[in-house]
Image (cartoon, rainbow, N blue to C red; front, side):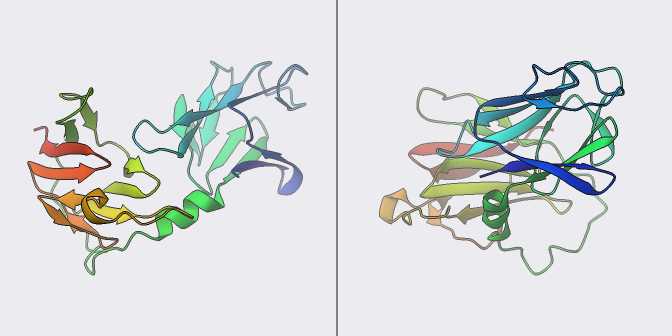
Length: 219
């Protein structure tokens, strides 16, 4: 289970398991997490847990600033809304929260990088999206803006990664999930693919969890 570790000047004060949909953070006692610090607004920020729109049994966790006086920082950058990743540091007033999600961290570590993944090209990366081709969401465009975009379900999950070199796709099996077999296995242009990252090109067709998607460049 994901959790927040509250610290002040490097000293751990308390841990908060993220076991419900939202946690408010602020100076007043009615907040789920109260911080006795005059630089913290009465209702400063909220941590929200939302279901991933494209992958079953996976949640996305966000921190949202509630128009606080002194702002909310994540890894030193002022944010309004930020999706948290394992190891992120949230600064509110003089206090810090470390976000820990070991399960998600292990999940991401299973992605296999190609041998030249550390070579950064100088060309600018065009914006890209995935177009839903079948089902009730046919025609919907999903922008690929995050470092990792996940789709599918626990047994048949794809991850599209955005890197300096381009866009890549990989099939990753979640913890405890039965491996997808036969027609249920993800395919790229009709061919199955696995944990080794495969580069995506314009108009590639992806099949996952009964959905057919088209990868497209927007520019």
